[in-house]
Image 1 (cartoon, rainbow, N blue to C red):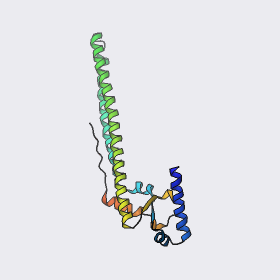
Image 2 (cartoon, rainbow, N blue to C red; image 1 turned 90 degrees about the vertical axis):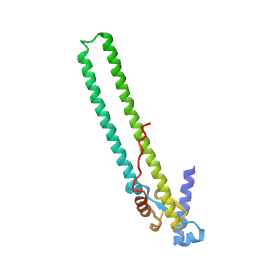
Image 3 (cartoon, rainbow, N blue to C red; image 1 turned 180 degrees about the horizontal axis):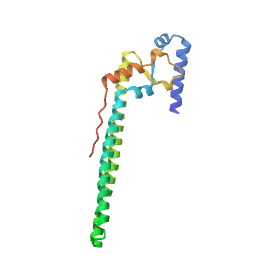
Image 4 (cartoon, rainbow, N blue to C red; image 1 turned 90 degrees about the horizontal axis):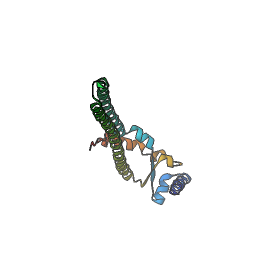
Length: 186
């Protein structure tokens, strides 16, 4: 229901702007200026988003290499255990098998923990990006006397001069070229 109300607000604003012919006169008369932004372009062109992806992928590769090394080590332990199976007493073999299984379980837990750490770091980076995006949008809107900024896909009609996308991308890339991710191992 709330989404429907927002669509009607956008529609009313678009019709009022379109019917009035002169959007500036309408804004002067009604005291509200509305602008739009293209979120897909912002997400595609903001260097901070690219930095989040690059850091996340680099850490994923590091974790994958660690997991690969651990898998190779465990394969060696397993092969050695299989070779010694006929030489060991059943009790010793069982104990070593139990220890090996515990190592495999611990390696699996580390791999899962690494995946969760990576997901949290990227999610926190994205949250930080949304925060800085909000700051930049507010700064630019204030500078231009704009009181409402909507995603362009919510607008039925928007005059090009009220599209702040290029300004926002430029300011974001200048002020926040990178968002550092924190991979908290604790």
